[in-house]
Image 1: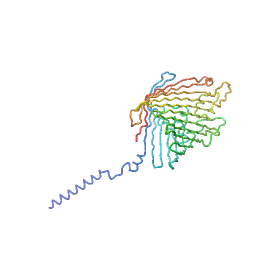
Image 2: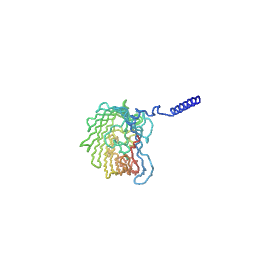
Image 3: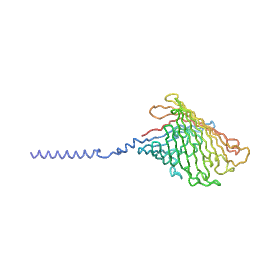
Length: 391
């Protein structure tokens, strides 16, 4: 009997020890690395790798220069909600310098870093670094969808820091107002010194935008007007009128852009002016552009596109009294034919072949200095584009 009791107690001790070992190896009593409330946040978040990769082949005046593989665009993006009425968005460009800018204290490579608060169903407010709400569809497209910009967008500061108010008047009409820093760098960094011109104490920009929708989306508009204070008494005025007509298998889009710059913000005119004529940043520069895009989905997986663009650069404040002068210094042309293949129905990934042809023509007056000659460039690309949704 004694031996039976000892055996029973020994067996009970062994079972208890085994139970302890079992419990120590069981992780169900520990909190999950991603708690339930965090899982909810993840379900409201998108993580996107915006990519444009290609084999780029370069030409000048029809002569082959070189070829190279390149990640033309890579912008990493996170966006989502942390509250039913609080939305955030962050996008960083890894194909641009990471240096913080002197005006807004954030890297120029950061396109977007803002929060949006939805105050009411019709009103929302945005704070941080955002897109300047230019009109025109060229800039409104995801940058990875652009093979080359026309001059105004290419040379502009398109992502600026400030505040925005948006009013959704109806499902068909939205109005936006922004107050932004007019630039990311200081006046001195951009313009050095200009006789008789003083920096402003608050270099601010006002941007007004209207998005319209007509005939059930067949015709849409994206118009804006902007006023940028560059220095005391010196402004930049910018008008952009975007218009899109949608039909069953494609669209026709036309943008008109006009920029009058009392200090040459783009710098295109300033780069053409000889130092012996005017050694400072040019004043009263004017840029006028047209941008036309045709899209046609000729098969379920195939899309054809054609872009044509023209940009005229004028120097309205030319101090030269030459009676033969022409305010128009340069006209640039661009044509971009493209074929795109979409292999998957459920993934926004496409392969493309495109040729970016640019021509630059200078006026006879602009050529008098002897340094400017007409020329053309070409870039034939084979690659892929995807806003790849990772999460």
